[in-house]
Image 1 (cartoon, rainbow, N blue to C red):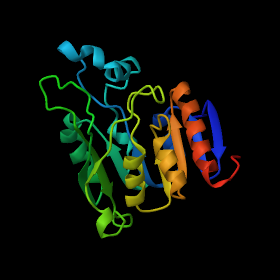
Image 2 (cartoon, rainbow, N blue to C red):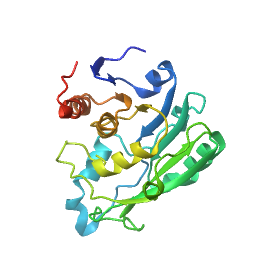
Image 3 (spheres, one colour):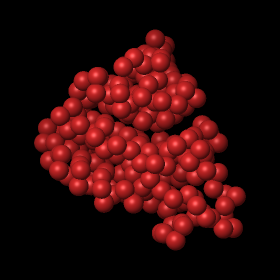
Image 4 (cartoon, rainbow, N blue to C red):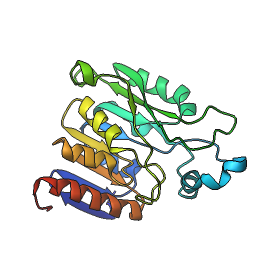
Length: 232
């Protein structure tokens, strides 16, 4: 499968492509760090409906239908970090637990959660799963290895994307994964790539949406230039 566009920025390679088709052709990565499509119900909302612009954008962009777990191939990566909606945990956890040596559910806490819950718990925490094989266990000193981090949600208007993860969350994740090569098959606006660039990791990103891909190129280029380097 040929990417519609390929951009090289230092040790980063960004593809405008369908990850399900392209990722299997790219070979081995030490770790996948990904924020795939959630599966959730965006109906209702009552008095808070007007405040749910980001959730509406998720639906408009088709990011509410879940994802195919087989994109995570334990024969082609040493570890994976995947964000998910809490309703996805019952299916995703057995898949990862059966494919990797160990896994753990971590959370990031949101001081500014979206003001809706749809007869569910308020979305003031969001899980992410870290699964790994023996050669790629979590890394970090004693004080780095907490499973919670608190960071405010990014407003969707910042990068015109509904689910941009805070820099503090992505920096912690990248700091805690083993290995040097990181791939984000659902790159979005490039938050994983920015964290990888700042950590001196080799990054590969894949994004289907051309608008978000252009934003990722800009953000990762800026991160590359932070120490005075010129992007390729």
